[in-house]
Image (tube, rainbow over all chains, first blue to last red; front, side, top):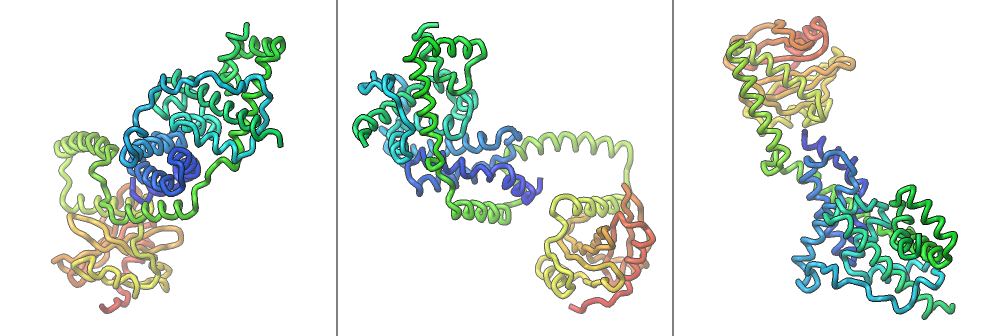
Length: 177
Length: 256
């Protein structure tokens, strides 16, 4: 295909998902500058490998590349103890001290939710973004992040427990208002 | 269903990943068990909390601009084929195999003359120009713009004429590759038809426009003048294409 045609097709099918790409990068990297770098590098890589895109879900395809780009970037830019492999066992959520299951949660203020997500380990943040903001199915998330579907489910369950805990805690401490 | 069985299903249920039978049983359980019903409501509430629009970061406009600019400069500076593009490699491998087979067949079945091959190349060049956005490198109806554009891009200066008065307006030009060399291609219109005029220098006697061939629905007319060879190709009918050729051959040349 002619390069200009290729670029046109890319701009029409892939670039419309740049918001999703930036959003994921922003939640993973934690700040705007790094997120822009990751999203830009991912977009350029996506164009380079556009030939391997088979016309399935362009958003999922782009986000896969964003994710890979981010983890490469992380290895280069962050100390290994932070970038180290996630040990799922180590992330077992201990029993919630504030029992989120017996209180009535209310829809929390966006700022509060933002802080709660930011406190999650990166692999949990990623799954929360993919499931709750992007609406991908378990299967799609498993394909996208290259982990078994069971891992997707257990990480999601634990991420939710942590979020409920911190949001419930928010209600208990600041909930009087 | 008891609470122990119900608990792990609540997430699947709120994510729409539970099968119909599971849904029925779980909903029945919610009806009987206020604790699980509360857990489900909390799961819903958490979902709502996470879905707020203001939690979604939209890409800054300058990021979008930067990416577009970068991509554009890449395709303009990069060689047409990126060697490390695997897609290209696969295509090329298949292509080479097919081409070998085709060549073998062609060689055994027919041996086209040099002239026939050239005509086929002209037609291919014409068809190529109609595909993709590959028709024009310089877009201008002004011959004084088109002619200088070729300077430095070719080892000759092609005559450029505008035949708007004869209703063959000049649209622009581009570089093309015919018979193993770079040639000038001028593009004209007649109504909705496109005429490609390929020009390059040769050592041959002047000749008047003559119909060379009609291949794949395209007409080709050839003439020579002042050590330049001219090949006009178009899906335009033969009569009008001949008019074009005669008008061009007779028209005022823009002096370099």
